[in-house]
Length: 306
Length: 153
Ligand SMILES: [Zn+2]
Image (tube, rainbow over all chains, first blue to last red; front, side, top):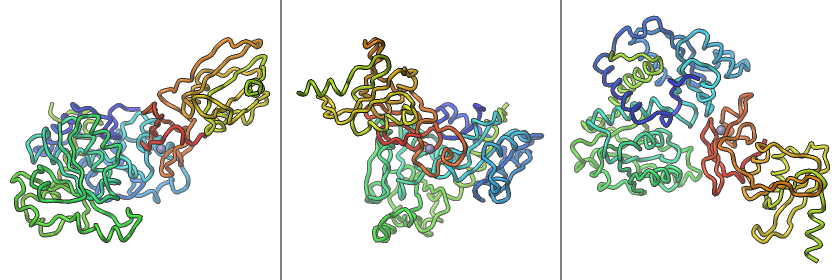
């Protein structure tokens, strides 16, 4: 097991988060270099995710590293019944770092237990996706100039949305105030509200996506509301448009407000928001490159700032 | 009368282990946790016995067997109230409560079908995150389950 692995955002401390953000800032200023010269990184995508894979592979390429791997499990011996353990052990013979995505939850954690090569979790089912959280944190830090004392409104699917859960956990060190806006069926799970209470984190909860909440927010984090999450389709039809953000709703919002969304979006952000300077979701995705360069260099024990 | 019944239920054991104060609803889970289904020893199981504090309780008596502490402590997962009596030559030589360990390896099956531990030949692992009531969390997929609802492997 390598201590430089990153499986879950809750594995790393406040200081490590701040160090990763500082690395991301460095890579935004210096995106291209040769610091990974001679290093080989495996991108093992047992489950396809073009967006995440391209982001990780670009991060490696821009730092001069080489990549091996696969983009879906059908092209590997996994489809012939090879265990994850055997695949990881085989690949670990060839590379300095493994970036993996898997449809099974806990796959990345298990991978760290069968190899000494560092492992970066690029998503394990509905469980963890720490590089998404780091790019969210970096986006917040960059647009607000700080992480402390911000009001963050989370909207949409707060029950199943792993990105909002991880962001909530990561923000615990920075005295946030949360507003949770969701329909009854998709509210923030009790365990995360209990987490907030334990940590003394202020939060409100409402089914109403009101202007008062919008106007008080520094960040609005929108998420996709998926039909298949509802047991009652009538309920989906009733609520699907209640959690859509329109440009007119932003008239009296803070000048520094930024709208975030992990993408892809469907209709939870109206296209009339796209040209508003408060819309940040496209740049947010670009920050993923710098956040991943930060995570990769940390995993390899390379500090670009020295 | 009730005294007689009670005496019958805990009929004398020369040597072995008596596990008492197991809530009736989890008695048979406790039997499984100890692996007694395949035991060749003389095992006596009593259930729905009167108990002041628990309402009804179960009791397990295993002749000529003493268990390692780690095995006994598994019972705390489902029956934190259980009391273990070690009997030697008709005397209770030790009486102790069970104590839940911090982690449970290879004992509980994860209830999440999408968990890696249900899809790979590997040992399960759970961390104890709450004691009253007992709550455990899968080390791999982070799903949580109450101790009393845990599926014993
Ligand atoms: Zn699990």
